[in-house]
Length: 265
Image 1 (tube, rainbow, N blue to C red):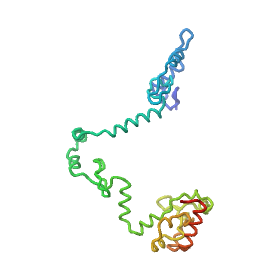
Image 2: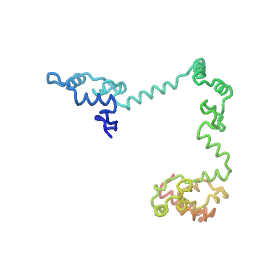
Image 3: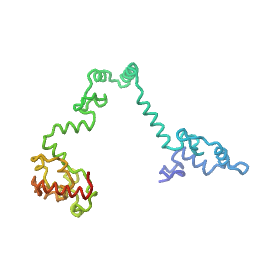
Image 4: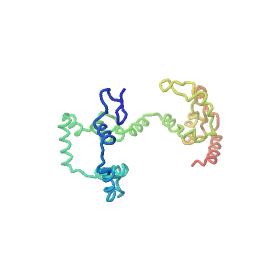
């Protein structure tokens, strides 16, 4: 495959450049003679520009000759200014008449007057918080993923809510001396059939079980503490079922020692 003479991208055999822009860049840089009376015109123009360079509208720094047509010296200055303008625009309060004009314009543009009017007169609301959904999201049940999670949790049994609250949320790598990482190297992480299919892998086990914690009304933060975690081959974890291999008193001592060692708040 032939390559563009300027940028190197693949092109068809009969062409020399991938685009007119590449052709102009290559010709201007390599083929045209910009010298006049032994003086390079570009250098002359650049020297003249540098005597009174253009200033960045944001920070006031000199704009380089090659970027002399820009308003800003860098992308950072440009983005910070544009974002500031956009944020101000969001604070603008539109009149009711202006809103209605936009709505009417959308009626014509979308070509679905009846459906849009119906939504405006009887809007769909989020099943969780009651917020009115946007027209394009009118067929959804929730306004956001957070509302869906809240509603899903409300539909759970009390035990499943407790089980969700007692999941381990810490990084094992933060405590390299506390866990048998050799098990992971040997068996890998447990993955169900539909997510990698490693049924013989390793999973995290609650030494004092979630079931015991629920029955005894133990604070979920105690059950999800790193001191209550260990790594086990998943099949052994399942066979352990809901049994605890430690008492709550022993767990509290472990947690106290752990917190002293790692200064956990």
